Length: 336
Image (tube, rainbow, N blue to C red; front, top):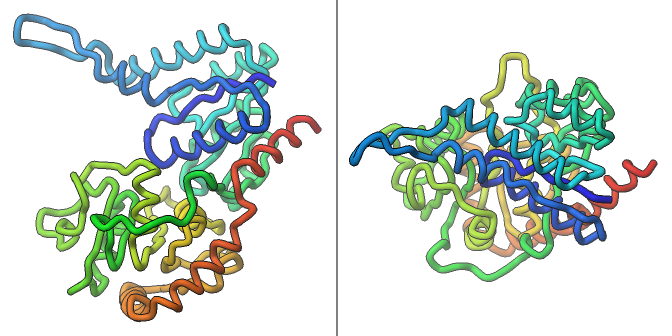
């Protein structure tokens, strides 16, 4: 089949999901063309026109940039005539575009990566043929055929490797600094430890003790390759699910992509408990408070052999969760 894969708007973690699916489908012999939605949104949103010798202004508003990027996707659909339009998250695309795409005989498949936090994915599903959601909590809410497809990893990227000296740390976390995470990490006992935080931490207050731990700028996001280096180089990592969501949104039950990728890298990390994580990773310790996380952190820093044993079991638990296996399943769903 011929595919047109529409990348997400963000150019960091969700983009890595998109890249994994594209590579796996191509590896399965599918013809996959890539539409770089995020690149076009950035280009169109930042394009400037000159008003005078020293004065410039934005060529397009945010809304106009989004519309223009969607129009380019329409052109790509017309040029490539795919059998399937694959969306990662599907944000920034007008529903009528998807309706027209389906009317023209193209199947629309969406990878819902943000469940159960994003209601927008539920709304978009009314304009799709199939949704693959990474968390089954909201499975019944989707308005088209939907299946639970767990997060995956790329063996060519997410694999054990050497410690990078400049990234070596006692404790590390890569992700967005949501307020709930800021408050949790500020309440932990990190005194005297070598700590590395990476990702977008622009919400940090000027007097936050976490500022000294942030690698790079407060708004810098790491690409997946550098994130893997951090996983490999830290003695202890952590996964803490954000608490920010719309009112009434249930907590997820599935593990997130951070846990799958870190486990594939052979990394040891502390777990924010969830049902699927409890089943997959019984060897990795859980915490329910900053004090408990602090105690776990210091104990495992002092016991490297216990870290290694637990990390090995976690890696074995997700060996089959590759994008290649996920792509094979998707092809089976589309052919049935």
